Amino acid sequence: MFSDASLHVHILQLVRAGRRPHEAPFSSMITAGGPSIFQDGKECGACYQVKCSGHASCFDRPVTVVVTDSCPDCVDEPVRFDLSGTAFGAMAAPGQADQLLNAGRLQIQYTRVSCNWGNGLDIAFRVDGGSNPNYIAVAIEYEDGDGDLSGVELMQSGAAWQPMQRSWGAVWKYNSGAALQGPLSIRLTSGSGKTLEATNVIPGGWTAGATYRSVVNYNPN
Image (cartoon, rainbow, N blue to C red; front, side, top):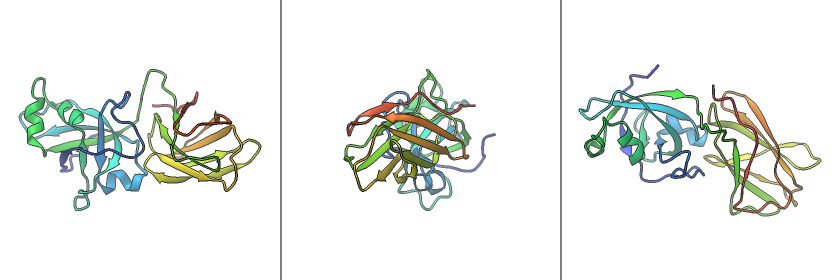
């Protein structure tokens, strides 16, 4: 069910949160959110359907966007989305994208939906370039279902699970104080409390900047 709340949309200029939004499967269908949407990064990765109203160029068909950033200018509004130009234009009727983009600010309806990246895409862990033998930070990508994470844990070879800390957005970090013993397993807890383990997903001898793909993902339904 779509919310009938009065919202505003601007074209998103800057994207952070540790994701690569211009690449597939995001394909620039992204949005920043005000405080109630982004929640200090806790909702990074959440998916929404949005559709505009009140403008002649609006098309009565929702488009799906993923939250990838905060909206620094949205603190005075209870709910607001700042869409990318691609997502903004996708709400337009056929041939009307330019007219809608020129509006700049619109009323929309929105609803939270399950993320479904499709094509058998499993969760990936991209090691941050600032990682070193004692410290690792990973951007976690392509979670189906809730899309957002409430907790992440790391387990070294032969050790117990240890909590990671959210660095920002989709990036989680762990400082061991000693050389990390791979392979490393990662356990995720979704926003609704569902857990998922990616066993030995990051090999011993891992490389900063590399992406390691798991063979697991949440159920998108």
